[in-house]
Length: 134
Image 1 (cartoon, helix red, strand yellow):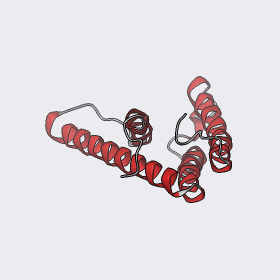
Image 2 (image 1 turned 90 degrees about the horizontal axis):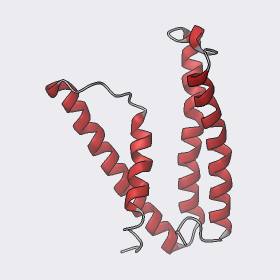
Image 3 (image 1 turned 30 degrees about the horizontal axis):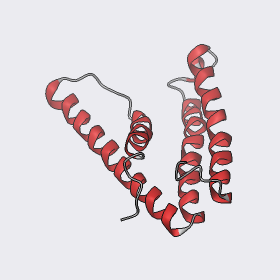
């Protein structure tokens, strides 16, 4: 059983919040990539609104994770915080490396929002190995 899905009220609220934020996010992203519904606003002021709408569930998901830490017991709080901090550090290190590779090695440009995916990828990779609070 994972630290997050431990059957506690905080764990259940985290799962509900995650679905509440990620379902709209996936639907928005699918509609942007599979249709041309948003093509006419790209590069216009309304594009800023679309950026806000797409980023709102991402911000909500981060809030859900921080709420899990706040609402959990000391052990779960410490383990999730440790996983969160290490994953954030790895994602920032990877983004920094790639940014310098773009500047100095002519690496192809990657969109900045990919750091969110890198963070959760790192979180998923390190979580099985970080199971203690010390």
